Length: 85
Image 1: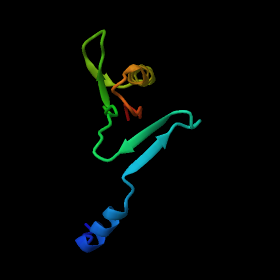
Image 2: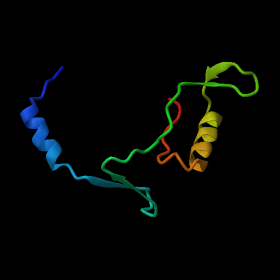
Image 3: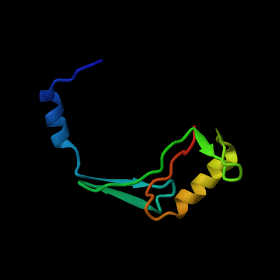
Image 4: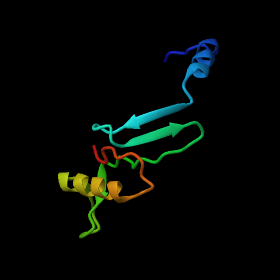
């Protein structure tokens, strides 16, 4: 473990920008990360519950497609990232 003294951390934190922008690859969509704002990205489960059998199982490529499609459709999800590992 590395411990960084607070006298190094605090000045660095004070120099951070208050706002940050994240763009898509084409730079046609932008998410503005502002101080005190919160954003939601979906989690990363390794397993899924099969909707047909009700059984827990390892995720498949089709599960990834389904999760990404769902995340893209939800207005409260700001960032779509890998949903299974």
